Image 1 (cartoon, helix red, strand yellow):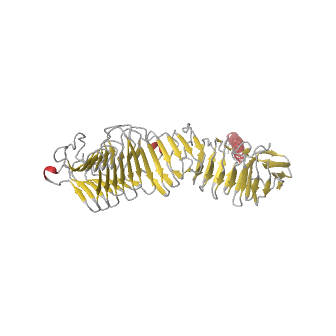
Image 2 (spheres, rainbow, N blue to C red; image 1 turned 180 degrees about the vertical axis):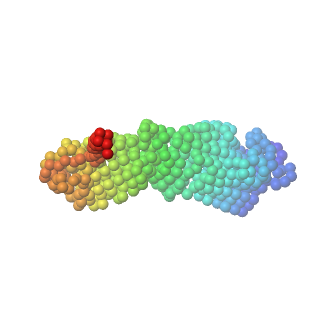
Image 3 (cartoon, rainbow, N blue to C red; image 1 turned 60 degrees about the horizontal axis):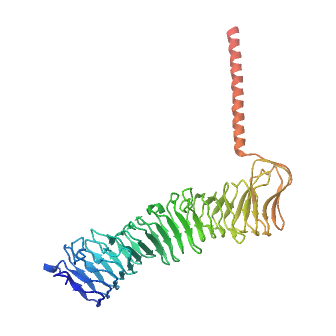
Length: 520
């Protein structure tokens, strides 16, 4: 029916075949049948290749089985078939023909479930012809023990025509993945690997990271519009999001997505679901500049990892919270509206600058185990929830003569650790200045109080009541700005130098006059 020397095993619609353990199905390796496929079947069939079995052909060229004419491939089939390759089994295109693949699905609705090895000597291991029904899809599941290996002139997985490919990789891919048009989806599970580049193709494509362990992704990647982080594991992306061309949406739906690249140029939208975490330094978290105009919605946790000085100017919104888990300083300058908890780990500093704010909700808690720095704020700092500062924590704040740089807490405050106060320049009258007000009650005291006051210029002390922390100045105090003092000294020095030079010139003129009149 198919003509001479086309396949070693030819099957019609609905066929079911099992290759037994350690068995071999081979096309001829020489003679008139060298360009045969090993197995060809049509629609609605199943093929099971058991452990230790081999399916192999040695094609040197040719157009393949009519009417598909897709090359003489080791296994070729049309639509709605299932091929299962058990651990230890092998499908191998061992010939020199680069147009012959180990597996070639010519239609759609097919599933390839691989726990063994699919490989080619010179061509592509799996090639999707997708010549019919472009609205449908093909599925590949590469299990943990599975290996898909490209030949010297091909790809591990490729496609040439319309139709979608859904690829789940738990195992090893040796080579690149390059898909065509359609709604393609590539899902990488922790512990899996792909040695080459990944091209989503010309359609509407999704790249997903899944699994329960930890893995790092650094592949060259292109033509994906959506990136999803699934499950409870941790995936670290070393390249910037802009390297995934056309990427418009990042969705962290579970576990942790750790970003390491510079994502200040990413202009897409980012969302974090409840229970999920987006992690990175300030430059890696999308929205750190005006480029992130389409927004960052945080209903989970943003964990900042800055070890140096980082600045985030975007607005963080949503029901989630943020954590500063790095050892450096993170400065927030946006008017943030997120409603969840805020945490500063030991060794880290969270600073607010300019109009930077953390409104939070009245149910949230701000826990400070590191340093909360609001010295750069020029107005009161408002927290809608509760504030907890442990013995390892420090609060740094400013004081001005009008007492308008307070920390105002709508909920409760439980304080310990260190308080540092930096006085702005000006004349401070003796009296009481409110530093902290907690509307729902304050407990605890600071174990250490430091400041930049001139010790000899003022007598001061801290005071507490059920809601407030006060600074008492027992005498008037004048704080001089260091920069202005230095500038004043420089101006005075310059003026004194000018006067001195004028006086020297006058003395010299007088002496010369005497010499001219009276000679020596």
